[in-house]
Image (cartoon, rainbow over all chains, first blue to last red):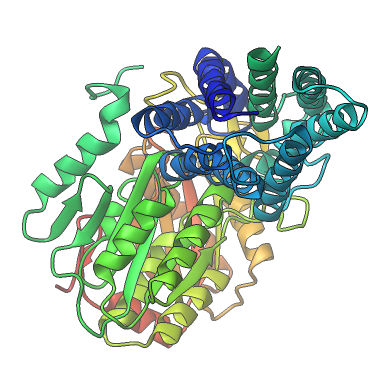
Length: 207
Length: 333
């Protein structure tokens, strides 16, 4: 992955979040407070503006800048979670204008660890982790099997989407949805859904 | 959606400009970093109190900035916690060198953003103590949820800890009395209708005409369960049973009682409810030492109410009675 591809991924993520903003907000209305799409859209729009303003010259720096922007623009839980994930991804990458696949997999793993450390969520809690964990597993498996970035990203996107869909049957144990108890069952988690969008954006720009 | 707004995207910024215009000389509003501060802050040597959370809960928190209460408040977007940059800017602006107490309601987003801000403040040499408010006993406090929500008791924590800071309390003392008030408080809420966030443009949930949401929070989310609407005296008894079971208040104890509207309930109904609560507490030999009836910790235009009972000590009552001068709470000053 080079700087141009990293920028393309974040722009595609912003596009997907904008296109799906209303759907994310509807999912959040069911079990949260109905602002996930609005908030994430505001954050990613700011990410695109920040990257257009002064594009970083290293892959890692692209993600760090994007993460810092999300933290400072989104608020709620999704701002710190997505922002910390992107910052951790960027910081874990080796310096330079291009990174190899194994390093990218390591960076994605650091991003997931950041989410888990900040949010304390485990698989099955009906959160971002339920899409991110299977996506990362699929990505790493593809990479160790010799796949290229496009193939690995496609596998990750499929796994993230399946993971997001599987949250429908779960009872939320983290975040605002946890206050609903059993009433959270039957609704797909908005955070897992937006995570699936972001992995799909990676598949789109590499495929 | 029918609201007095211009553009849903500008609601928070324009409301901030309005509160500044309405309280000249008392409040300073920073529009770029979005926080409201006392005009006389920072005050050297005084422990500063900073709170914040999503907008849509007015007068919480911006309306409680002033002498005897908060030094600054950070309103986020509607029902969305403020961001760390905002909280850090407010914290730096009001720090008088004696440290800053963050009053944080227990919601995942608020907790994370205030935690990040406290770490950034520590990097800049400012000592921050956080007081977490989690008084809503409708939510089970277990490892399987995010823990009890912070609701009506936030006002009591901010008033009483604010008074302690105003009279010269040290950082640890101000935080300690805030935590003590939170521990002594329990709240329970009912909603008759959902509120409408300007960005979403429609009510947060649909509710049949004869049903209510029981155990709602203040973010437009549905409650713990749905029930048929019953007479107010029955709802009051149910809520007080839950409150007094969660936080035992014994015969002879004194309490501060908050009968709080969620934004869309008229005072006629809130006073009716106050009367019912007073009857039940009297039966149980509990003295309402002080009370507040009105819309203080709201959820936009949600029709509904919350009851908060705080078992008080002499010290808490003394601090409650201390002068306060803010847009939303004002006495003795």
